[in-house]
Image 1 (cartoon, rainbow, N blue to C red):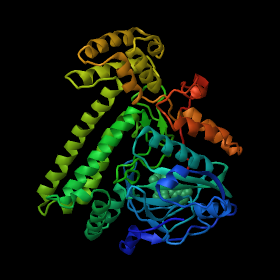
Image 2 (spheres, protein in one colour):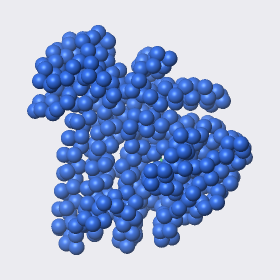
Image 3 (cartoon, helix red, strand yellow):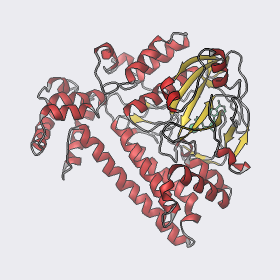
Length: 486
Ligand code: AMP
Ligand code: MG
């Protein structure tokens, strides 16, 4: 089924533990991503659904797979844990896709590993479907993220706060190397391990850096830039990751681990959804600062490779951290300038955007809908935009300033509106809709899960049949808290 070529399994033994998935009672395929399977060159045998489910649940290990649990460490909410590792995820192997890109095929929830600590190695149905929905929404939005190949029910219960149905999530990633993977070796004083890993990720993700003057400082900068760009784009769709621990930040620049993540409803920069984030460490507006903090942790791991002279190594790391801030600022400005329909960037645009955001905050405007309706205003229809605000005065004043700024750009209202609709989604996985899909699925009704996925395939289109999925939650529908629910 898979044409495996497993580069990570060829790394030294201390990088992982070889471990087979633990077979489950009754594997049943809930969802299979045929389009992605095609991209990966996977030949799935649909005439034998039982075998397909058995493979994707880990009951049958397909030829060529070399199942491993990867070792990693990580800062969780700022506290360093020297050993985390794949406690319930097993990397089956890697395939090279139709575009020549190497991708990991991982089974999440496939049973215990040497890194499981007190965990059961399993995943519950709800979180599996949430990860499925949000990863595929990200792909359709055009944001880098790991992908969903399949969701499989295990036919076994898992004990969480209450008993739930178990499931396995089949995740596809550019790789699963994280900031925390570097920390695993650095924390052990294993500089050789750090170097081997750095060389590995340069080869796999940044081959153009092999010939750089210092490939390792170039690597640090490249990872920092990809993360700065990624976080700017999260901000642009109102996304709150929720657990930006260093073990949940990839080296590839893909978003990973959709646990207690959420999308903003009404705009509030201080917004936190995760029940475990009491201090608001990972609040919406803190994300760029945390991204930089995580890159600082990566920089510490790479110090011995940056320069033989320790002071010069620290200077090089600090320079990159400063560049992270600049890069984020400029990406953020670009993202939001496009959201408000600007072609060029001029002095004062940042302020114009901030004034809008302040009005949205004060007016409790729905983040997604307000930007989407601003496209109507670009065509001269202001009502729906203004209706997003509790009181219209500030929004009305802002429209005046916006139009003054737009006067300096040669583009018709229609063209501008079309460009804005191409970057301001109409359909996002709204928290209350995701919850609705998960609740129904817990009663074995997958119809809303399927419908939501279908709507999310074309997030920039307003299709009348999905009108209900575009509207913000009513007060009683609002989800105020999300749970890791691992
Ligand atoms: P996460 O919150 O999914 O990023 O996971 C953080 C760490 O906890 C990782 O090392 C996971 O492998 C581990 N973990 C989470 N849930 C479980 C579980 N049910 N069984 C074993 N390990 C787990
Ligand atoms: Mg994780």
